[in-house]
Length: 406
Image (cartoon, rainbow, N blue to C red; front, side):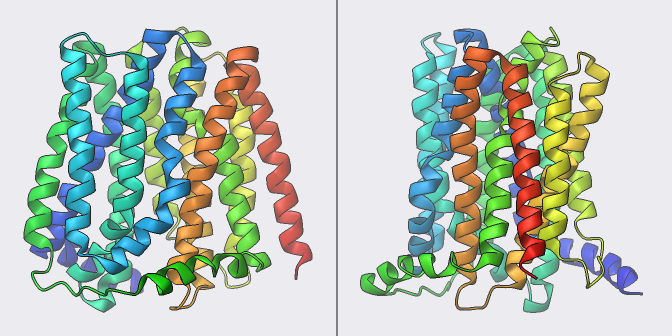
């Protein structure tokens, strides 16, 4: 009966004009972002022939989150959130326009792409906490969980559609179309933000001393073994397994001898897996089963999947395994996030979410540069074999530790 109610409630929420506008604008914006994220590594690889440069670009995109995510949360609490979003997303849009112009005049170089990735990563880190605060202001309190669920579905839908569209455009028209599409995708986002954001949004300005004191609370939270294990799961997954997506173009060219169309299809398969994983994340589980342990088990299978991908030479098998990778990566992250939220209080929820984001981005940044170095010396297959084995071992140890803490 509850499922029937949920199915009836979902379309009614999407019939709410402001939420629907936000949902659609976010979908378009994320599709544009994914299109560029597919095109950019391919361009770097074809321009430089270096897998290390691909890893360095991903590092520059994710590393700012390690430094600026917590400060982005403070800005969201102290300033008008709409202005924070418009400022930093505007800078980000301008950076992508510069990248597009440089490409059009044939002046684009790899180091320029990497610098712009640093700008995009920094602006994302500073604006994302403000952006994430929009959903609760658009719906009634009782609809917030459903709104967040729909937003997660939107993100995974864009992760499936963006790479698939990018693969077609890359093959027929080149990377210029992906950059152009991402630039245009900012327009509906900015327009919807002006319309949907509450005109009398409450601004909570806190003294700087209080904001700084919040940073000192993080070591206390990290002493909790439940939080430690969950963050370790996210970090290990992000470090050893998530860079598989970054280095997919290297796999396609060097191992499978495929073309840009194959690359787009493989990324679309991963996106499909992410969408399926997001759907599976909302299936009720028995009370006796702990989500952090399920997350470790699923992440262990993700490590095995990464290891297996490095051993095969069939594109058909790669498509299938990338779907599995999308399912396991998304499902593991959802279970960890839900587990942390269950053990959070209103007074520390924001800090715990920030720690989750930090673990995710720190793993992505350090994992990308590490696998980039490994692949440049040993080849991408051996680098992924090492990553997959270490991920599986570490997730097994995390699972064993969580059981022993009963």
